[in-house]
Image (cartoon, rainbow, N blue to C red; front, side, top):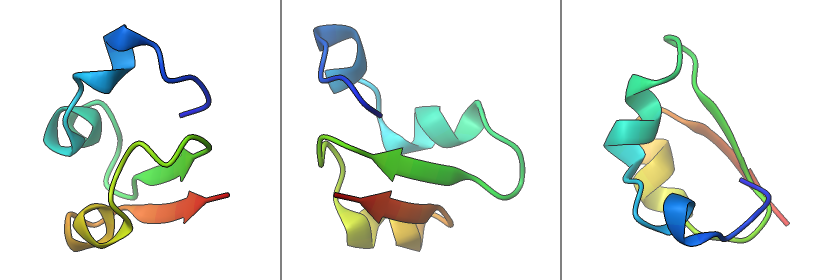
Length: 48
């Protein structure tokens, strides 16, 4: 995620994961998601 537009603010981690393959990678430039929640759901999570 690189932008914090309203369209992206309402998306949940489970919705996001449903759009990805079995090895989801989330690079969260705006810290919109909680690292622990993302990793618990199986994301490889990176943030600035």
